[in-house]
Image (cartoon, rainbow, N blue to C red; front, side, top):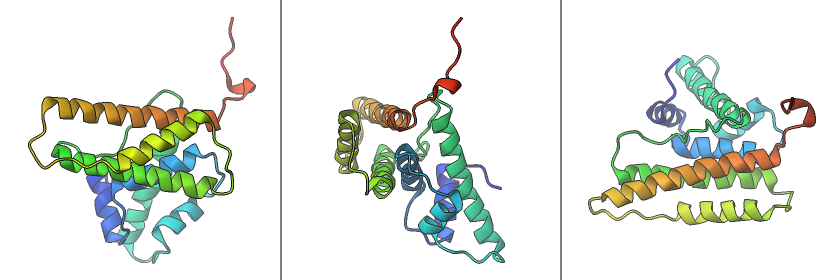
Length: 184
């Protein structure tokens, strides 16, 4: 199986004729998982990428790669070790990375929204983070040469989204008393 990267996920989604990029797909998974909705992984994948011919080896490999992405996101969020890494293009122009970041935000909003549509209860911090996601999803990057400040701003946005997604996940998935470490 291919190594998980923005490009490998984008290629797999393209071959599967899914109109999302890798960042948006990861955002969908993060939003869905952060919502605390209970859903079977296979059903969720089937809804997002549709039914595939099991005899088509390339399609099967591509679906397995997307399933691997879901498992990795699940592990990164559930470990509580601040390990979530946004799936964004590496070493690309700032404009390309910023477009992927807006796609990630759109994906998160979709995954979270679909999963919480019946539950209108949100906390103030959830509403603030979701509002931030909406604002960032509208981000437009000028075509001019980015400055060092633009790069720093981008990195701060990535960190804000990374931390916000993990905090939202933790709010919706509190540790039980039996899983918290014992104090001596």
